[in-house]
Length: 73
Image (cartoon, rainbow, N blue to C red; front, top):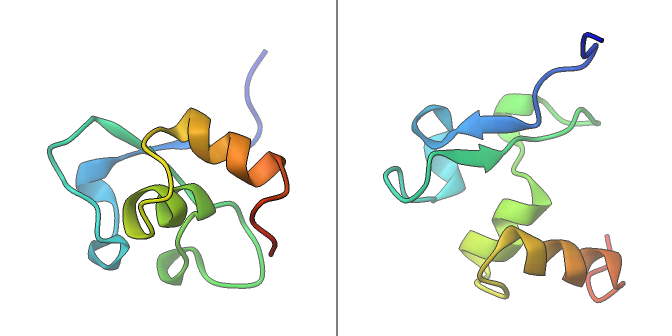
């Protein structure tokens, strides 16, 4: 089957500069989901928690924190 929506991954080289992530660390980073703000002006929650706030080291830890209810929107 073909995926209707876009990919959930984005190459780090193509990520916006204001995300503040390293370019050469790993190949992929999660992308934003559509919402009330433009895609070019928003930052994914996982990237914000992991790379900006440094509350977690991996995406798995970020998901645990978010789904555990320790971060409220």
